[in-house]
Length: 309
Image (cartoon, rainbow, N blue to C red; front, side, top):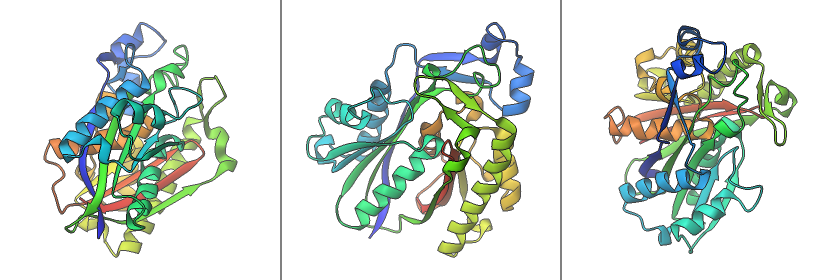
């Protein structure tokens, strides 16, 4: 019995903030942002709360999975921008969904949060401690971005992505996953309590490419899968140059990477589930395909997951 993604969903805020809008706010340009990051626009949650975005994505995922909220054993939220200090965003979402059967909690692993959550959920399903799990990656990064800092404010966006996991009756499964962290590198990407995001971009670029490549190679080796067997790579959407460099290092054609950073920017823990949902909707990912996911975020945290969709 494997672990299956039974349904996916997204919620994207209505407000669109383009590079041309940012030109009016800080000393930057569309050309500068696009060339260095690949981002053209991002979503900003001016009306929506973190829980509202998480709920929107969750309801779509539950509907697509044909799962009732009352049948959920676990509600797991990956976020670095929780609704409150406590209770967890997971508990608040659980109440909104009416998922009274199970329990809820949050994972804080920044941009790696979603694949960390997949690791936890996979273990719960395969141990028999849960049968149906909802995972949500949700962020409202606009609240912790310094809109006067042109080096960071152009990068981030808001949104939510959700998946419903259950035991599979077919070949669908999480084949291998490896998670890592190195707290000694915390100051490369962080935000102080009640503070703004701070980042050492050049250092982060080098570490990200190197560590994500290593994590990907480890899961491929563990599963006995070669890079040319991969149907789709869904990387964390942080910077298109990081994605291109990673694909080159892995020897996988760039057109096998799913990229939507141009429309949403870096949505941290929400980026992979949003991309996963869109890949399925666009027909880029079909049942039986091998998909490689990888991310790196503050902590520093990083990892990779290989699954057969």
